[in-house]
Length: 479
Image (cartoon, rainbow, N blue to C red; front, top):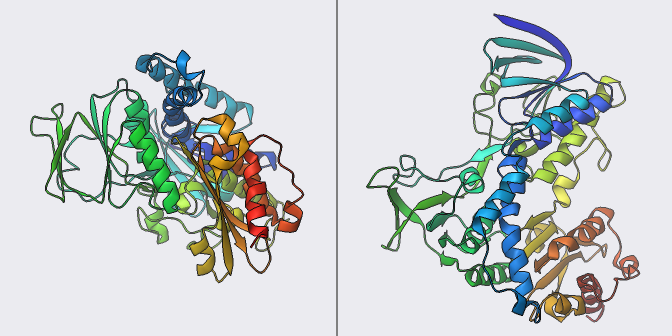
């Protein structure tokens, strides 16, 4: 039999985004029920951000030591793959979410274990993990925070042939002898390098080039880094068919459009993700399964009248990154609480706590390959498409004193995209060892719209790689 319950807010999805929605709504004085059928904490904690970076870090540390004369001579061994996998597993707590469940309880949230679907206005019916159903009615809002799922490309035989998704790659119990990676975006590039450094023979298949969404210098430097790690990068090729002729445990064969055939022990498909909206009852509201939920900046779903349905994170298709999902979650939680109290009668003001304005102009991203890539804001082409007159400034990072100390023969590159009329930074890209730590300064510059004349007075410490900011500003001044 179904039980019924009324509450202020129902959040479907207990990943990082849903946790933030629930936490901030509760801090705002609302009663919240969090619905989750899997592990509380979601993809990032158990299958994406944390385990993938744990797989990458040992190889990066070893490579970094080998780039410094004097330290290089002390490094005589190779990675202990079993130890790396044990450390990876430690970061996932052995895929046990007990600590996250304890956090939710301590934060004052009610957790309902099961699969939720929308069955009416402000109504969610949960198929409970332990049997039965619970019907939840929300006084103020329902939030969809179900994230995304792997998108399988239409390659002949792929659906029937056993293959890895990124989940399988980040939770693997052993390193395969041979690995083919289909897709040279962020996930494919990162995991290719991780497994090559763990001892696998890796072939990375890129339909165009490595990291095709980034500037060409980024692709060149990361491609060189992948090759140095032992990855065989095949650019400009696509998979035509996939099969495992000897059964699910036999080798996998991938035929390419250039007529060649590759064989391996495992095939990782990393060709992108799509919003996880199927099976949520959204079709009754006019939203097709698999489609992103378009939202306003406060998270309200535009296709649903009444302003009661919200969405945040990957499911919106806005900025599919964990930190942006958490940011959107904080915004939605605050907006729900403010509207419930009558403090937000209309649209949210840009850059207020009730609007995810950064989604449009200041999304930061790090690619944790070696070399790393860090990017925030608009690329030059994106800015021009929005009608902004821009100029770009470039710098060889290897010429910066701090970078030369970090590694012998340091190779890196930096770019600023500057608004010609307002003289503020619209975007920045860095590639090189350790550049992730340069990103937040760039993010602040973009969000704060700091004029270059004022930015000139932000003096970088010497000798650090942050001195690249001074070099970029000097180059711009010399024009």
